[in-house]
Image (cartoon, rainbow, N blue to C red; front, side, top):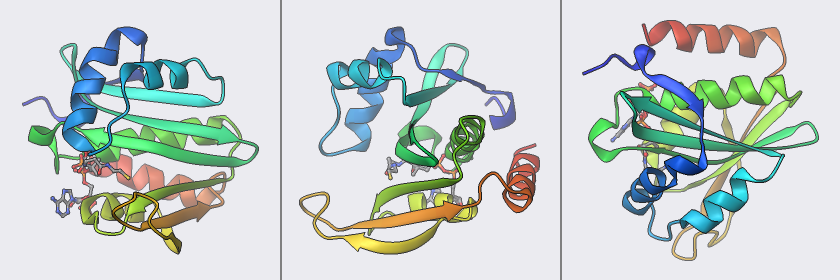
Length: 166
Ligand SMILES: CC(C)(COP(=O)(O)OP(=O)(O)OC[C@H]1O[C@@H](n2cnc3c(N)ncnc32)[C@H](O)[C@@H]1OP(=O)(O)O)[C@@H](O)C(=O)NCCC(=O)NCCS
């Protein structure tokens, strides 16, 4: 299996939407369809990345930057490739993109029961700050934030995470 640091990370394109929506349906009970992704891709404030091995999409992640705030809209990894740091690599890509677009904070909502995702986000310094009741109809969302992503402490954290992927 290709090591995660050698996998290709690149912007999502319309041509990826068949693979992306397949992964989406495996990941979420209320998946976005290709039309919704196409609409997202068309918006200037959005950045979507895919991670691929030999032209096979293994995961993707999205970001919306408004003002100084970056909102992570999604992170998904192929069920057979989870717990192998692909999510970490996608988050590194999103964080770099957020900083490049002058964001100072990063936030997201995550299911209260989603331990793997929360672990991933904690690694990036994201801390729970509140709960949105029944955000997912059947479950509450935990709201997580990390601030000062343009500072040296966050840069060191990212460098350390990047190093751990080698
Ligand atoms: C959440 C998700 C993107 C994580 O991606 P991943 O590639 O498996 O994550 P990584 O391998 O980079 O691991 C990230 C952290 O989660 C932990 N983790 C991964 N899978 C885990 C599991 N099944 N149980 C517990 N912890 C787990 C890892 O140990 C790691 O923690 P560490 O850095 O402290 O060691 C992936 O599980 C997924 O696609 N889930 C379905 C979609 C989803 O829920 N997305 C999040 C929406 S908010």
